[in-house]
Image 1 (cartoon, protein in one colour):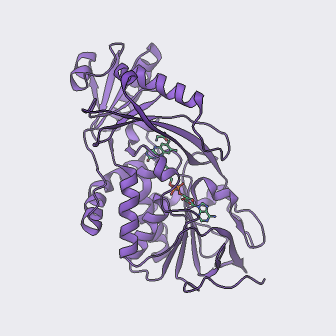
Image 2 (cartoon, rainbow, N blue to C red):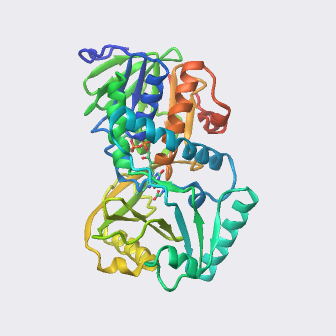
Image 3 (tube, rainbow, N blue to C red):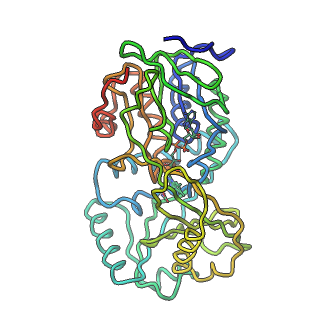
Length: 386
Ligand code: FAD
Ligand code: GLY
């Protein structure tokens, strides 16, 4: 097959990472730290422009998971990496990703919510996790802004948050310092596969040759094709999440606060993020009247004082969701040199440091880490795409 000319100055690489969100950036950094020299990261727009910018930054497996399974273990293991990850990024780049460790409250407002927090408390207690059951008075003493309608609460001291936009900034500086070549505003049109092996990628600026390609294209993964125009075997659907941003002069709350319907995330600079929606509307990344209404109603249920705060910003992002809602991490068995790191759905910020490590380990050692086995693309019958 004939391809157009190569990208000037970047004819070839040892590893190409497609996608410059937190997942692609974390992988590029982990590869560089393991001594891989010629890494090229290709991003269609600017680094972190999509879901990684839109996210709320919660590192909250205990508030988000529904039980102890392989996904929960992955999420907790990644959460545990964060303190060292934040320190290393600060030392490398001078950027503080604002790992804020006050913890998370989970509130009940209805009878059904009370059953939900009871269930959550029980499975987490049985699993030996750090979870506190609070009376209404205790919860309101911790966060006086909480609605008087609250009927019960849990506290997860280890579910914390980061400023995900600072995380993108820190990772971007880090990978550049480690010598990763960044091709932004460059669209990967197809992955070149010949005789069952990766040959490189065809971009809007020409071809880049490499024996290894990592697909970290988030919600757009299913739009990528191989050179024979076959679509890739992993299916990822965009799931829209809208966010509202309020401004506070003095901090209204210190914890991240969830209800079963929404959440509020207080940033150190006084911004208060409220989220979110879960909408299957294709690639329409916009804020809607219904979204604003829904998020505001859920935020006011948690903290009525939000009603008088200025709404200063709003945005939407597309979460990458696979058929079983679990991420896809690892090598495609049928195409030598093809790796996936996508489908992180609601937890890509949380899972970024561990995903970087798992993918880099498999690329450099040729073996998947045990933790990654169940997230392999093979579960979707990853067949050859020559
Ligand atoms: P993205 O950040 O979307 O990056 C993928 C990149 O690939 C994009 O920059 C895109 O331009 C690029 N790309 C795509 N196709 C191509 C191509 N052909 N060529 C070149 N480049 C390409 N997660 C948490 O852990 N905690 C949270 O609190 C949280 N809150 C969220 C709230 C909202 C409203 C949303 C929308 C998401 C939230 N998430 C959260 C989920 C998290 O944002 C995602 O799981 C994570 O950002 C996925 O990272 P990514 O790098 O895979 O995708
Ligand atoms: N994890 C929060 C969200 O996806 O909205």
